[in-house]
Length: 271
Length: 150
Image (cartoon, rainbow over all chains, first blue to last red; front, side, top):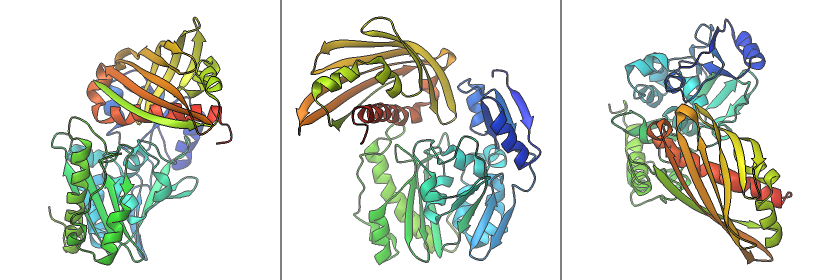
């Protein structure tokens, strides 16, 4: 690693001030992507602003028909939260599939969402559930938030503080994971909401998470894995690499979507 | 590792004008993603410094941009080669062809890119997407510089 200056933010406002003022800053929110990248010298920010000791950013609360998760909540805490397990079991299940135990105990939901890795799990949940990403400046709907490969609507000096998930009627997630990295080769999150059905796909698209309108339409007629039989999505726009071709990924989107629908119909998601 | 991609853009300007812009250092500088500096070495050679940012990865590159196979106003080849220190190296080129279509110009491109070093090993699952995004960015910005209103 190259030398950098470490700042421990004592509060959100402190962090925001540092972010505004310091040269070439980077927010540290768990560091499960940023730190390995820095160790490989593929990134060398001059100033690191650590949110770890900022209070009140890792709470999980339920209010009305929604669940709000603080940006600094670890994946493992989302996975184990009775509130999340009860209200949106698919989301608790998803958090338990992220990375390995070390990643789940350090990585945070805000960090993952801000990074918008095209293979990450949380973006699919945010998009399918119609989440709202709350920052220190404004509220951003998930539909407006994810802008493609590692790109988000966040301004350079903006910090995610919490994410609000409306509680769906039912939801399911199915992840076909890369055995080495545990990233989603393809992951599909299906949510049946009071007003609509959403199917969000991560891992497959070459520019990040996306929805599949044709699948949503079919599920609206009947919410069953059978409704998706025979439907395909074009390989055009799918990612292609040594782990799988674009055609393979396009095929997996349908397989994963059917399994996600099946999981949504079960009381507890399949492990 | 190597990759290829292609695409086309319809521009609302005559070929001669498009070709001129393709040779204009100011236009190129504005279009090359993350380009901070582009110094002219000769009519067909430039020295470039640019910062590439893909998610957590941020690398500063120094390299050369060369124009070859000049065939005004039908097209040319633009290639770049850069060293990003420990991050690795990257080189690539785009064959650009201009043809008359619908009273304007159809620009088609074929990009070939190669990267090596640490960036290639670690970034494998991201490189194709990132390279495509950069090519798209370049030609998007170029289209805007030709048709400011579009």
